Image 1: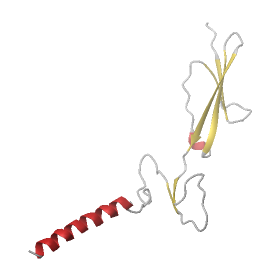
Image 2 (image 1 turned 90 degrees about the vertical axis):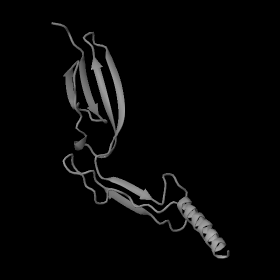
Image 3 (image 1 turned 45 degrees about the vertical axis):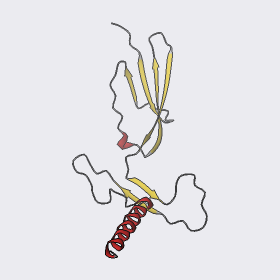
Image 4 (image 1 turned 30 degrees about the vertical axis):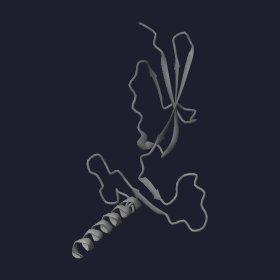
Length: 133
């Protein structure tokens, strides 16, 4: 029988591994049991000769409802009263999608208003020109 490398998988700074397996291996990490935020997957392998290899994989879990904030950006410098609009919406399950609140309402961009005023002014100019004939 051939000797195989051993793979030990740790999550964050936990002293106890979440899995100890012989290579090659297929492994499923269930992120639904993790809190939202940044995590690190630490994989330690040990070959039959006793040498060890290490790989750290940082990742971010976002299982909870998505949060959208309008009115302030990250690392912004602000003063006075800052109006904020905050929306939070969940993804639902794989069987049904939650539509209520899944889109954040946004104001009409200023370039649309400028375009509408420009077209309205152009139409009014030609209407006055046509009526004056």
